Image (cartoon, rainbow, N blue to C red; front, side, top):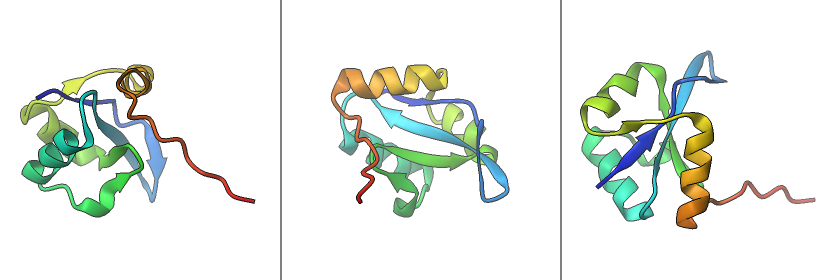
Length: 88
């Protein structure tokens, strides 16, 4: 099982966030997140948003550190990228 995390560089709600993704399946990602204690509400379309204070926890649990650009490449390569729907 390989799950990836980008650096906490995304601002929101007064803190910085990382993205936690899988390059295999959502099931793998959900299992990793559950084992880490990440609440299901943190899942957004194709990734989990993880606050910066949990970054080291994810890495200790086995998440591989990659760039934000690599996160997107991994999602597209696995066919797991779900773009945000913007309705009219």
